[in-house]
Length: 246
Length: 201
Image 1 (tube, rainbow over the protein chains, first blue to last red):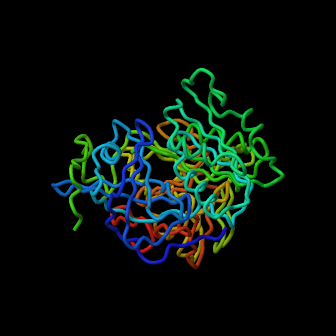
Image 2: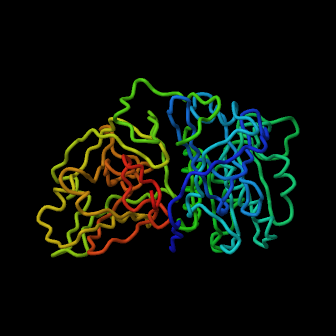
Image 3: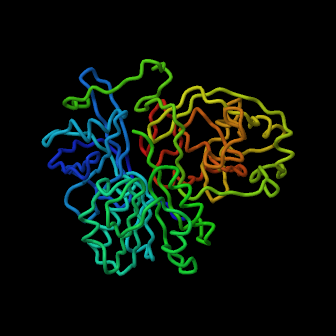
């Protein structure tokens, strides 16, 4: 496969927080103005670096939630209470603060409309973030590629980008949400984990050579990717990304 | 000089020896999994390990032959480019010195190749002199597939993407060729102590 090498050094940029959006109780989107941002492709990530008063630094990687066509760069961060960086980003950070950031990074877990489809996006929890960038890109370029999104969240309140997903759904984008821990009375969607039988029903026929992107916690990514291979999907057309602790 | 991030204090671990943690890394007790695609599952009957390319003759070991080679258990620190480091990890495997013993080559570079199509490139000398192993056990247990089992390359002095999971062999080469992540802009060499994460670092 052809690699797309990044040219030159990826230098640290000063990004300014222009808006903060609470997506769920635990998840916040950080809208950043990044002078000189070179642009990105949907699915890429950035490194964020924080510096304490005594010079101590911490770095983490975050997926970019915005589409290449969006004006600002958006990161969506889930607050992990025992984490070091996410409680700051999704708690302490205020509009007007600055962050050091460099990117975009990664060129494999990327979808752009020229890659075609049909597209199967499978996300768990905050694994929806890079997939949302792909959906926004799809809609910004009015792609004719049919898309299915299978998204697993614990509760309805934990569904990130819920309103936007409802808006994007319908037409070429088929959004299917499953709630694994609890669901409200009258919930019409799926419940329980994304399992093999749901995948058999919801994935595209393997002979159509669909492109699949799976992002979420390791357990979900492993079981979904393995099930898709068993269902006859070509391993090389299943791209995965895992979310580790931060 | 980086500006101070207002209100950020950080949570330094006091149980980890700072001199063992490269710049920009944090210590974790977990063992995060990072792979670009599905985990390959194959029968050990069809597994082999091959040294090919610029060599006097190609060598191949079956699984049985491979695990019958002299193995050693090493305790090393590992550093992932995604920022986590894990200290005192215990691996059992065959030293590359053992596998390369008697191989005549003028090659200076290696492209390691894996099930699933993954590759990574390294200078040959980074695999020599007790710096690298083909490990098949982690913490005394058979290496799990999601962590690269049945066998993976372990080159602890470089970022861990160089420690190819599901490794099936080495191609010795006169000229360097970028592997999978190296082709996507990650650093060609990947020394964590120099913080060589991406091309140009």
